[in-house]
Picture 1 (tube, rainbow, N blue to C red):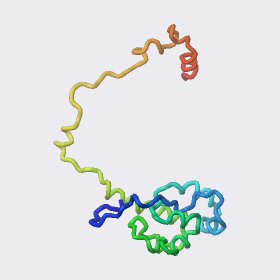
Picture 2 (picture 1 turned 90 degrees about the horizontal axis):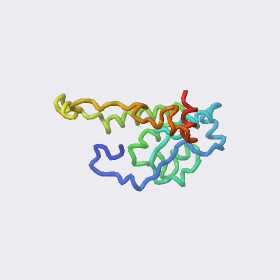
Picture 3 (picture 1 turned 120 degrees about the vertical axis):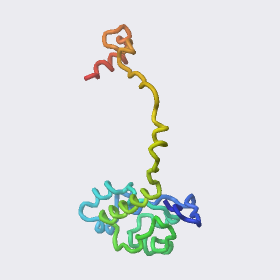
Length: 165
């Protein structure tokens, strides 16, 4: 997404993935306050989602710092040249609503970057399979798997048969 419609390419391979909301199970009091009384549920729900992930060259420096520090520090979100981080500089806090709103914005952006191709009907039809459908398979094609066959006396077969509803 970072380089979509961009003439001057951003070398995104120089960045690492940052969890804006820290992965640490023992969140600081500031993080817990910002996330609210259901902070554990918020962390569990939103931690690894599009809304809470970004790219940065300052992952080690960000660490588990509170959002405002990540935003305002040297190299923080306010100074980020990445489109992916646009809007983070204007937020006062990072909570469930902010994460959800960012996820929605990024998802909308992604649908523009990776849009569904538009094909003319003739082109689409040229890729449609031709001829008869292949025959389906059934247990009858594999007699050794059928219940009561000599092969079904093996422990694996007996287990499989016993697990069949």
